[in-house]
Length: 81
Length: 213
Image 1 (cartoon, rainbow over the protein chains, first blue to last red):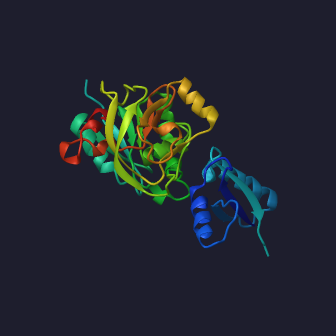
Image 2: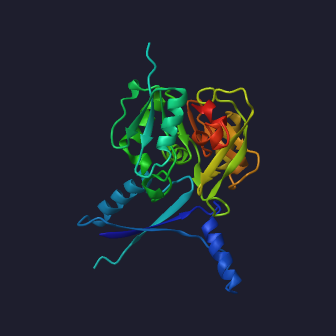
Image 3: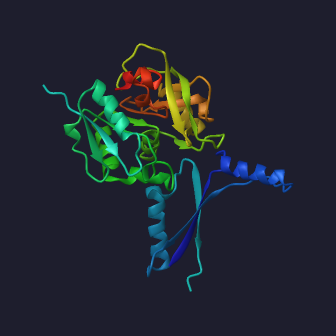
């Protein structure tokens, strides 16, 4: 099973990369209110079913894939055809 | 009784390990390199230094993968036994990832890698690692991710417990409260972004780093 994990900085943490990207586009006349940059991690759990895969991913997250002090995450089920 | 050596942890991507080794050798005399994949024989050492660099190429987060190595995990045990542990730059990031120190180090506010000498104030003296009567130091910094960050609650706890060790006189990277270095509550674990090992001889530009070793 393939799962995608989106990891971004928490809202209260200043995202300097996002700010730099926002300002660069602003110079080209493309304005938007905010920009946050994160990481996209794809993990293939092989033949594990959904429940076991989610349990495994949560252990991986807890053991350091994300830093709960500064980051937040969401898990997406990818096309597993 | 013979003096035990100080252990310097080495990871793939460490690049200040030999500088730290030589700085310790100059002052403490006994020092030994420790490979990250090996477990630490804690009792054989007087203390441990996690040096600067870009361990594991800063993949995932600075210090995150190094913190998962057997040697780094053994530092948790060393801390329980109150051994002195010092993290310099990337080493500071590793100690934060291990949660031996609170908070995290983020990309500099300017997004630039900063390489310059800075003036520091010793906010709370820590005699475990710094043997000096000075209240101010001049040391070099060289980092892209040195912006110290923690929650307001953690910051209050750092202040209340006198864990803010070093502060920049002029904030170079956007760190909360100009923080350049902190300690744990017991004072045996210390982390700082500046590089004391790069200020241990006049030809380097200063000798304020000598008192760390």
